[in-house]
Length: 367
Image 1: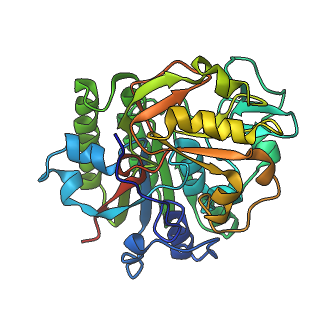
Image 2: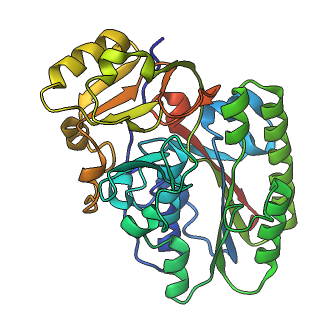
């Protein structure tokens, strides 16, 4: 069934939030700021904290958290993810202030022309394997960027990052909150970016309605709101990188007429796929793909996607064009097409409301 669609808006999305942070700390932004955050610009805080809870989109908090609970009563507004609405693209945007076309970390799997392979970006593995793609990190080598924290520190300020991928000991929301509290107690004005990988992981495996997901969200709300009560002179922003949608699933390899048109497996995500189609097979590919998936995916030439500036209106980095392929399929229903991994219960990445809309929650302890 087709869903309500939300196209990216690069003046009201998660890529704008870090630019408001940069401006707040006296550093030149690299893009537009976020109006939802800018209302706090007239106050001076000892600490500004952004805590990103992976996958906790608008639909998820409405499904699991009470309307009169801490998160929803402190909701400042709803804004959007980037395209693709996925952790790789969105968290890179929130860490850099750059749009996906500018930073080049586009999806869970990217095609890297230099090695002519699809690679799992965060893990640096070849697609569909546990094999290292190279003896160096491809993403950081070919698409490096400077973080907001680095920019603030370089300008003479103080900025920190708290996340399990940076410190394996930060392996629970309790430990994330404890680290934030410790840093907030240190002298001086500072920015703290914190990331926790739930409820995303639970929803992928169990679906958005699972009891474990509900329990985790209630627990996170409790711990984070208690953290806010223990701090003063602090602005805590809680947000998400994207939402989630429970999905029906199929496997691309079960459609040999489509597979026969491809140079390689697609990359990106099961909700948004990029295709490298063999020369002379374009018409056949369009016919076969639309025959099978026209009710579930919007197929467009990649040239059209670039013209629509789906990956952002900024200046694309040099490597961007070569990573894309010549067709883009965008999920418009609850169907996901898996091609390199086992199907999961819930996904994200595309432009439905459930995937694109995210909350901005604020605890202003300055009063």
